[in-house]
Structure formats: C-alpha cells, structure tokens
Image (cartoon, rainbow, N blue to C red; front, top):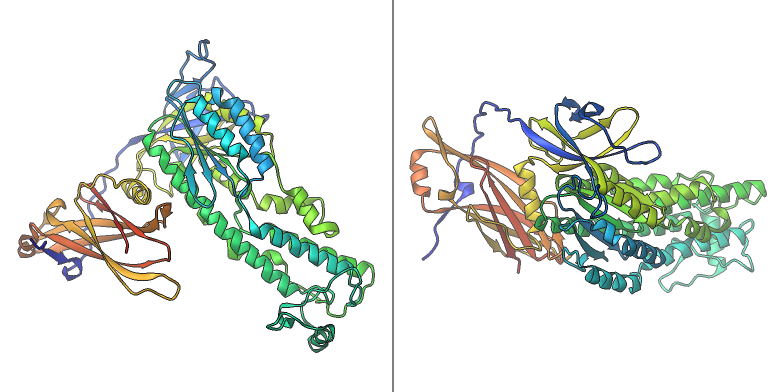
Length: 586
C-alpha cells in the first residue's frame, strides 16, 4: 500500500503563544578535587568551606561527602568508595613521539592495579591516527590490558610528512641568510628562488633572478636568497595541514566519548596521551618564523650588511595565526565531555623545545620564544583539562602524572546543590574552596537539557545502532546533483507519523511543536547537528485529514565528498518524546 503523507511546507506556520513559566528545582551533583598550594589533596572540609556559583548566582549546597579510597583490605579501602569508575586512555599515535609513548605506556603498566582498585572499575584503550580505534572494550582483565599495551608500545609512530618539510624550510632560511652577504651568492649557501621567479620548468638562471631583484627592489626578501612571501606561503600551508590534523583528532576524541554511554555512573576520565593540540593551528610555526625574522634583521643591522632587497618593515607573522583558530573546536569537545561528566587529563613527558632550537639553528632564541612556540602546540590540552575538572601534565614525568590521576580518583568530595534549570552547554558552574584552596569540579549527575541529549545521540548514531524511535520517524533520501569537488546537494525527507505527535487544542486551533536535529557524516562520526524548530497551528478540518498519515519534513543538505550517511533526531516539544533514524546515502 502506498504510504500517504502531507508535506510540512503545505502547512500554515505560526508562533505558539508563550505559556507561563514553571520553575523546577533539581539537584546537580559534582565531584570536586581540592588541593593546597603544593598540590596535595585536602580532606576534612565541610559544606561551609565551599561556594557554588551557577551562571554567577550562588546556589544552596544540599549535601557534601568525602570519598577516600585506599588499597583493598585496608581501613581506607573499606571507607566510602564511591561508584565504579571508567578510565579511557586515548593515545594519539600521530602526534606523540614514539619515545614519549613508550614512557607513558611503561608508567600506565605500573599503575593499572591502582587505577582499577575496585571490583567494578573498568579501563578502555583507544588509539588515534586520524580516526579513533578502540583496542579493548571496557575491561579489568590485566592480561588483556598488558597484551594491548605491548602492541601499542611496539607500533611505529604515524607519519607526519609535513614536519620534515617545515624543518627544512627553516634550515634553508637560516643557511641562505648566513651564506648570503649583501645579496651575493655564497659558495656554501644555495640560493632558493622566489615563488615568482620559477618558470613552468622550474629552472631560472642567476641573471634572471638578479634581473627580477633589480626590477622589484621592494620585494619582501631578507637578502636576495630569502623570499619572505614564499616562506610565509609555506608556513600557511603547514598551518592548514596542522589544522586539518587537529580537527581529525578532536573528531576522533568526540567519537571516543560515546564509549561512556555503555558505562553509567562513577568517575569518568579520559587520559589523553598526545603530542600536540593547538588552539591556533600553526601558531608555533608563525612564532618560529617571527623569531627567525627578527633575529635576522638584528644580525643584518649589527653586521652592517647591505640592505639591498631587504624589506624595510615586515608585519609580524603572528598576525597569521587568527586564520587557524581551533578554540571553538576544542571548546565543543570540552562541552561534550563536561555534560557527560568526563574529566580530561593530558599526559606527555616530552616537549618539542629541542626540536624547535635544532630546526631554527642560530636564529632561534633558546629562551622565551622557544617556550612560547612549544606551548602553542599544547595549549589545547590545558584548555580541555581546565574546562572539565582534569589536569594537564605536559612535560611532566608520566609516573608523576599517573600518580596525580590516581589521587584524583581516590580522594575527592561529592557535592550536591540546588539548581533551577537543566544544565546546557552555556551553563557555567564555578566551585570555590575557602582558605586559598584550589577546587576542580566535574559534573557527576545533572538534569541535562533535552535538546543537548538529542544532539549528542544524533552524533553517536553515526557509528552505533539507532536509538529508541518512540516517534516512529523514517528517512527518505532523494539523490541530488554532484559538484566538481565531489559534494552533493540533496533532500532528505523526515517522515513523521502525525498520530505520534502531541497536538493540543488552544481555542479553536490545534497546535504542536518539534525540533529536528540533522548531522551528515560517516562511520567515524559526523558534523555538529543542525537544529531547526517548527511550530504548527491547524484547524480542526486539517487535523482530521492528517490522522493516520505522516508529515514529510524536507531537509536540504550539502553532503561533502566521502560522507555517506545522515543521522536525524526529532524532539516533540510538547511531550518530550524522541525519534531517531539513520540512512545510508547513495
């Protein structure tokens, strides 16, 4: 039988009348770690020692209990143990040096028994190399964990082809500047032609390049052999590559967070073992370039070198980094983790300061500029940790890092306070401890906004089974034109059984409202869901015609190359019921 439906676009729309507001008081629970100025965990505190601010408003603390876990069989071990805990260790094989990875694995191996101290505790191992690859399920099997750790320890580091290219760029830059006095060719320093001086065959003679320099004396060259525009172009290309790589890592981590759905309750941690997570992709390269340029200019002034072909003034390369801002992407991951009650801990015992000095040679400062460049590659770790109540252990011994992680798991406070609204991505919760103590809070349990829950489920649905479909929705994709870049424009119709929706009578009209969440992706995850909310008002005659039929809600999509599925969620704003569906795109 042909299924009947009515297009939503045929229906008249109107804004529903605003109903009176009801304030519901609910309880939000936090896990709070308190430390003193030396980093030692502080016990023995009471409710009076804490203050909770939600969106700047002080909230009433209803309960506080101290959780201390010790070795099994001891008095501390028999104390308040808290709920079973889940620890996901994500190792980014593409960004962390192999030597650092081996050190972290060795420390983790020695700490597993302490991390899994309770009977219900579980650990999962995941590796990341563009996408997320679970290496174990949630397990407490020491033999399985040891086997997988040995595999990970022995795996080669994932290739990062652009790293060598950018290092060669700085080496050439330094060599050219050192071996090029007054713009004359050096016997020891090869000349690198500018981008504009290379013909289609790639060959130009010295006379041609000198003619170019004479015709264009104002070009951005620091000495005839150093073309600033060419170097800046290469730096931008590297930053773009790093940006894409970081986006992939963040997407893989977001995918990994959904592993926690099968493990409700208890402390939830992600131990992220990675080498880089910049807030501004390529900021370290622009920092290195800025340092090298300033040092070269100083060197030229100090040695009274000829200024022929040198730029009188160059804008700082640091202004370039704003085009590669990753802070919103990092914040989106932090928000997803925070609302799932997950704290991030970053671990990497090695930094790349030595690499920075080696690749930039004598023109790199071994002091503050190197530190700033190294820090620019890892500042995203710190931001993730701060936002979720965890810690960043970049540059610290992995033994110390895992010791601190264990203490965070074993000694903390369970704090409850009264809230007046569900937690949303915009909710800001601040916990303060009196007496100059430091407090780090992670959401343990809270009423989360239905909209966020649906959006999160839509993302998860790209690589897991579809969730419960209480509203009985169905998807009908319609093929569209394919662009030159491989993308497709198409329409997906969301079929919504009318009788599943809650329709209420207001005066002589019948009204309903729902929100649709749509994400396009592949088996590794998808784009952040787009949300549309629609309010409908019908007369009695239209309602009778719709009974037993379906509303077809059309969604226009642009599907990027490689994307092969669409995930949809529907939230009935009157009943709170949801419907989920996923469709493969042809």
